[in-house]
Length: 408
Image: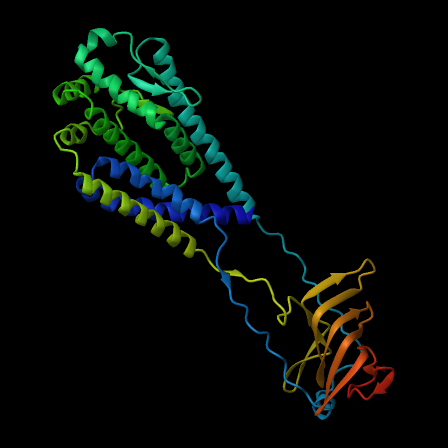
């Protein structure tokens, strides 16, 4: 649950940053490369969101520091008790489960936003049944054009042709389905005001782009502007569709852009290249902004560590023993096996092997390519046994002085 909430926050941060950047630059870029470029800019929002879900970069592994070797004389001076000290088990304290509470709040918010949008959609369909809705494109599985009952009386032939040309562009571009996905994003990210602002800007640029595409047909700009003005009386909202002209879309801005000429071909090509570069930059930046994930351990970097017991001594903490290895397997009897690059630290030295077994009583058995740093000597053997309770050290069956105090 915590991972899901962190993922949700990461995706929202990535998309919010892109939305802010689009709002800062969309108008000058739209004037330079055309309104189609302004509409296409909103593709960067899902690109950044999806890029933030990619696996993060791996953090480099840091070598594990080796404890300093302690001589037998220093061990005896520390006066370590011979019996094993039972580990301290922390008493759990009842606290609020904040991740669970946040998840419940998010779920309730999703449901409330979905109900709000569904209510707006139901109002539109009620008006449609009464013959008072449209012109619009509705439907997700089968998008269709809806016009009011008085469509023929309200608009002239040329105005009707302009409106229908606009709605056909919506059908061709699958804008109704894109708006449904935008509504879904509003539900998931209901807590983020930048997402709602971004959806509003997305739909505005969607209408501007459809206006420009429709005017490339044999349609009078004057008739088109008159149709926009006549339709402005519509007050309904259509979350999962494309309504003409819809109160969300600024009429003055749409009429003003009707006077602009289509950008030259070289500008449109340059805009396409700029869009590809911007998409690449947004995706890479969203992916690189993720925190590094720890890399998987390789040979020579232990992935698990066990400290049997610890006491504060004269010169700092002293361990009865510490064992590390690439892989740790727990047996059914609670004993454990340590495999691959096993490193064992004693208070007076250290040993290495390829395999180790640790019993419940604290007895460690190292086997396979055993090396023991004993004082100033490096010794090799096939097996090494160490009993923490007694301090007995055996190397290939030979008792070795461990330098540790005996149990009473």
